[in-house]
Length: 131
Image (cartoon, rainbow, N blue to C red; front, side):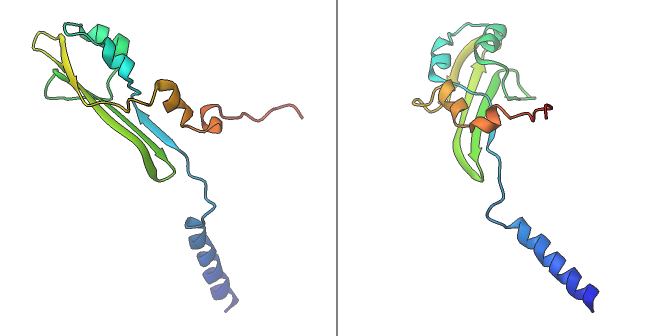
C-alpha cells in the first residue's frame, strides 16, 4: 500500500513540475537580422556574392529556383512571438539582383534586435574554476 501511495505522489509531483509557473523558458532568436539600412544599400544589378556580403546568407533558398532568397527572422520571448518578418530577394535569370519584397520593422535596428535578448543569454556566465 505504501508503494502505491508513494508512486502516486511521485507521479503527481512529476506532472505538476511540468506546469509549474516558475519554469524558466529561454528567449529564442532565429533567422537573419535585416535592417532598412541594409535594404537601402541593395542596388539592381548586384551579383549574388555582393548581396551575400551585404545581407549574409539567406535562411532559405528555394530548391526549385535560384531566383529567390528568403530572409526570415523570429524572436520569441518565452512562448510569445515578439518580432517576425520575412524579406524575399529576387534575382533575374542572369543571376543579378533585381528587387525585394517585405520589410523588417523600420524602427528596429540591428543593435535593438540584439538587445532584445537578455544579457545572460547573449553573454552566458562561465563558472570560475578558482575556489
